[in-house]
Length: 122
Image (cartoon, rainbow, N blue to C red; front, side):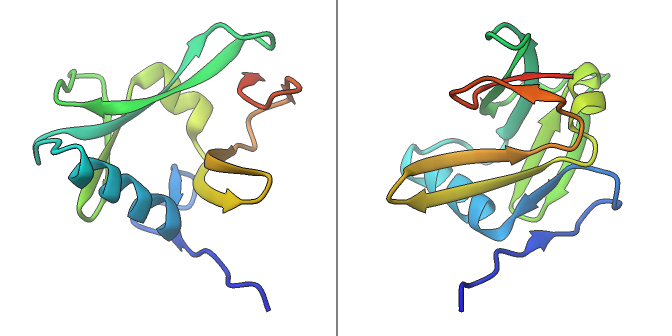
């Protein structure tokens, strides 16, 4: 039986979710790269890509007054106000399989994606 990857339910049901596997990988990356504790993990959606938008991911120390801060225990996730509208209800997971390794989004707000899966449209 395939092991289920649980979602962390630290926020309301309509908010952004992250799986335990993705959280573990982000914390490993943070530790491996000596990223300071005061840095959060910024997730956003920016214009670009063949479908209109692309996800942006990275560690960031800057927090703006309009940012949403989501608490996932040892990791705080920072989402700008505009991206938050696109990410509400979405889930970030991490896969490690024969077909690929990396972070993937399950986003109910996305209407179409491109062939490579890194561009989205709302």
